[in-house]
Image (cartoon, helix red, strand yellow):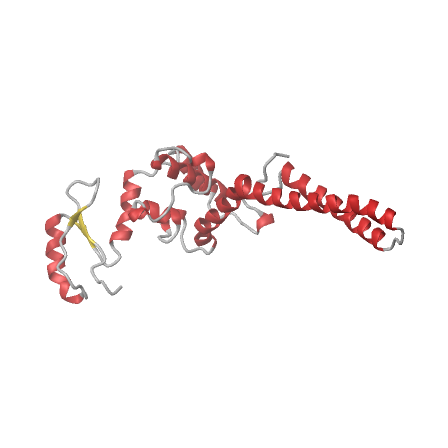
Length: 239
């Protein structure tokens, strides 16, 4: 048993505080009933000298458990919540890979490069406290893929990522290739958008702009990292 709790079991500290608190509560209840039924004032005072410190000890143990959870174990719960968010679309059979779902954390990072820094790149794991954002996302992808390939009956979680898919990603070191990133970002761009050369985008925008409800004239914007490629996205401002 480890000191800290994990997703599958409680740690030594949590278990010790739990059972020690339970024991002290039983003693507290017993001493309280005993003191209540005594008529001898001296004997009652003697019992209360034990009863009161036990009550204080239980309070301190409870506060200690809360502090331990907040500063030492809270990340574990956060990590499971984030994992559930990224795996739920696969459990619902909406997509085949976590980053294919646009509204998950991985999907947003891959498809928009975390536009406007909307999401944190900490991912709820101390392991990711590295400077490189690329490395943090790679490690989180590894965590999601590995967890998604494991069935968890205790959490009513079934395998949602095929082991062959995980093995393929493992060979690539869970890196997102340039082609894969481009493919995912075109899905983001094509949400009522155009992608191609500057001339192609400008020509087709002029051709179809009367079909969109846009207040301002839009101009093709270069796609970062893809020389010669331009895009216009969200042509219709009412979508």
